[in-house]
Amino acid sequence: MNTALSDSHRWICVYCGSRDGVDARHRQAAGVLGTVLARAGIGLVYGSARVGLMGAVADAALAAGGVVLGVIPRGLADREVAHHGVSELRVVETMHQRKLAMIEAADGFIAMPGGFGTLEELFEVLTWHQIGWHDKPVGLLDVAGFYQPLIACMNHMRDQGFVGSEHVSRIAVAENAESLVQQVIARLPGAA
Image (tube, rainbow, N blue to C red; front, top):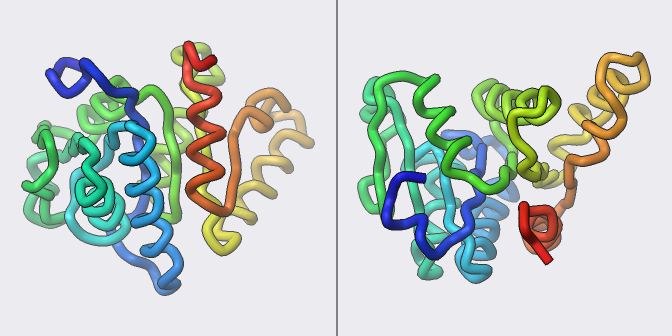
């Protein structure tokens, strides 16, 4: 990552919704995740919105003394209400630049509940690993069973021979942030 923030931190990119969703447990879990990352000394990379789960995870990380890098395309800065209180805000021109900047900045990835964008980002990092472009860990924060249908689908793709079992089994899954962050940290490149 090309920033002074990178000098002393490992970074986890969190993919999640710019909405809260209907289940209050999702927003609560976002707050817990932000706090857990900050207390572990892990910097947060995320899509830079100050609303929805994205805002909740960033606000919690900042409140716990963490560092937060937000990346947002200029066209979404107003619509998603860019968070100007983060440690560093990067405004890029396109969604492709946003996704690449987040992938390059991160040492690992966690997906929380979200919509199409969250799934797109998740599957991009899974695909890039599958083709050998990175070896960074990926985790799913399975709040209230949110990801169970997706996990079943990925297992079905594996069973039908479209995805190697090693690519499915490498995804860490946990219902709570503490457990998931521990799993992802343990899989970071260079972790003891």
